[in-house]
Image (cartoon, rainbow, N blue to C red):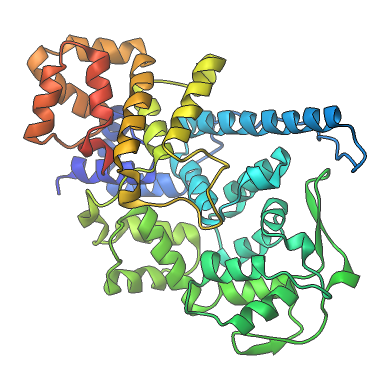
Length: 433
């Protein structure tokens, strides 16, 4: 693979969507230097907007009036909307693109929905935990996550007591977050739930609190080991299992490399890299198998829209309120809005995003984005000769090339830059990368 194509492939996977200028700069720096800069960027991210600050919404008692309850619920919805708007803008503006894309990866992995949590500060705090702790030792990160207030609330951890163990968090911790199906038993789930007892959520403070009298202090046998496990020890145990290393490597491969099953030799090399997340990412992007994964991932709707906005020079924060509503509505039409995963299993992947109805929704959102493209972007397309505009579009959208069928469709729209952009954004060559 030529160096530029190889670097473009890397940047399409490790960012939300590279600009042509970013590919140019990376090509000058070289592949290995680009991987280093992506995985461990220097300094603070000067492009990332600061998070919103919220006043706590009053927790109302059972005797509160209907009007007060409606007002509180409206405040909660407005705050969640503010986070969605802020995060979409941050995804576009962040200079440390892999860092932000990993936050989105973990959001799909530890999938938590604001529709149940109903507390914007808890959701915002979880995103910050992903950003600050999701790149180092996986066991340390897992230990933090079992005490994450949003996750604990989402999976009913605050209801888990010695007298009435609730298995939700223990089950999903092993099945979806660390080990995968087949690497634990129902008895492990029951014992793990006992280890997690005693934690409650203080929604006003945005923290969890341990209540000793609610905790089961007895011995538990988990994954063949017996001890008086508590939450930290349980998290450490499952995250350091050999199955966890293979599970994490496979998850990263599935989201950043290929929807196809990972080859045994590739899995072996990634597992050998250890459980440090940055080390795993570096190993993934430099593995010989990664180069051969072009065209094997379908962009998730958020990745698709954010990448398009980066390439078209659109900042969500500079859109009108109505346009931001249309943006989020467009993502809702594509069945993926941040902070609203459909279940604890997160969003689907691959061909699930390529339905007939999703194509219609994608066309509508692409039309909105093309209509908001920055003037310099439109000027560059207009400056190219009509016959060369499909190639100018390929450079703009960092597409390696068009099939004859797509090129004909684009050529027919070459006289209308906004229409050309819209068709390019919904093309197979852009949607599948």
